[in-house]
Length: 93
Image 1 (cartoon, rainbow, N blue to C red):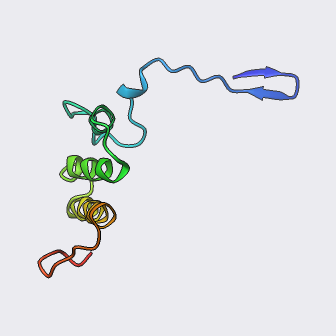
Image 2 (image 1 turned 180 degrees about the vertical axis):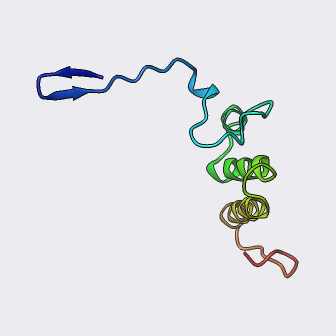
């Protein structure tokens, strides 16, 4: 931190690449490729990216709830990209 008069300036020096850091938790650290990099390099949409993220981490963090979240994002994708096509065999969420 640097003080200049009555103004406090906080200097943050990042010593690692943002792509190598994880803010909060470590559930992505051991993966061969981070979901964010996969999503970015494959130009996935927000809905597709969230589904990938939850699928990748379910066994490390959120369990069944992460699978439900992934399914929810895929159902949103189906609805918004392909129209209302829900059948009786689709999950009701």
